Length: 212
Image (cartoon, rainbow, N blue to C red; front, side, top):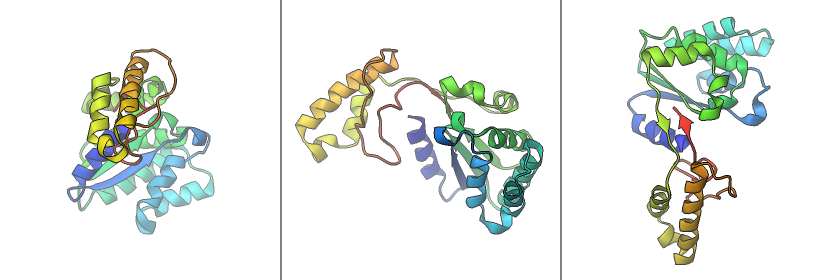
């Protein structure tokens, strides 16, 4: 799914650009500044001082936080290109999303790539300015649901046959067919992991449409 694609891109960018990975969580929707706190934690004490102070004071708003994010990102991109990835943006808190939108719309001349990934049914939660900036200066990549053959191929790439034996591989092919039906709109039962956990997997409930 989209998260596996993001991890693959991050590995490809390693050594060529500075990278930041932020991720939303549905249990933290009401946590104001949740994504921004992740940004501070990945930026070091000096670079993230202004944003950290705003968040600690409890008085951050989208404009003040957005300005601090803009300053932070420009500072980090001063020596090497910077890639900022927000995964599961549909679960990001409103303050963070609006602050990131403020900054992204003002980074046209800076060596900063912003990648925002979200589920198709979560696009409405993204700030209109961020969506508009992506349409005007970026690109949208839609990941369609996987068909049975593609899910089976992923299972083979994960070397399920070697690691778990033919009986589990047979079950993985059944899961692949079920995953394909779910991607097509069949509610079915949830598909469990058919690949290793961590970067590049698992494949299961992630099957479906996503926007990057």
